[in-house]
Image (cartoon, rainbow, N blue to C red; front, side, top):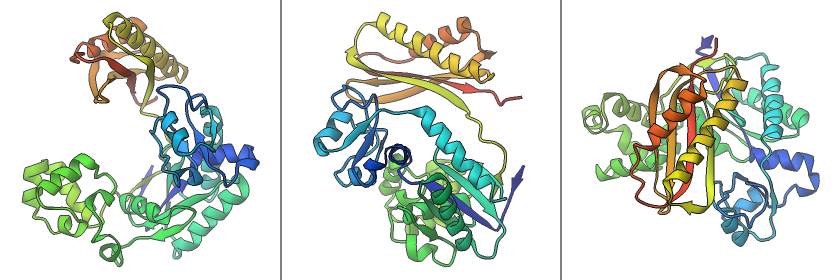
Length: 346
């Protein structure tokens, strides 16, 4: 069931993984905490999954190699990733949000949209923050708007631990002079293409002729970019349970692989492990994707549809190997990943 409420609130849990760790290790509160890998900062090829705000002040961020993080913040506490604990904490928070009586659209571990026809959305945002703090002992930031994309941008302005409201009334004042990548959904690649067209600010993008954008980006993307720049977006909130659309496993190797047999073996193992997750959820795979990162850190993903939906290893594993065949493996391989896209349940 989807609704189009008057207000959409984007709830984003602050430094979620680190906060869950601090909740069960209160002595770490306010200290630099880094979550990733097995919690060993000397472990090669492992990266930061989450850094607490004090750790971020040292320049540590998600995706950074743990060894680099240790150099930047040698006094940090390094902890292993614990997905089961994060699943449980996330479900606790989402149930609290559902208990408020409004439609909730969950977008993963640490974020959700709340749709509400209320006169005072700031009061509701305060209730959300207070409830999560009191009941789950976690903090969150809340962005308020009339659509998802603008609410998501507002949350970024609210962090950490705050509330921010973005509407037509203050959109241009707040966002107009910001660079286009301040818009949710505009990544570095799109920003570079826009810069080549002398479009660098949100105001400039909002004033661009639609034909110019559709010529450069196609009719769908071009008009979507224009809508985002004007503060528009998706106005619906779905109360359906959040269901993963895919499952994946990735491995970064202690040493770069050069032997194709080793690569094939790794892909086969990743495919089987991912398939185990899929079958445990009584789901079925429809497409298989393979990600390759070479020694120059160049990363690409290729994806192909299975002949028919399947959970048969004799179908899925060979399909993953065929996708690997699509790559030019002319450099040593640093990372491999397999993702299985899933049919809707039911």
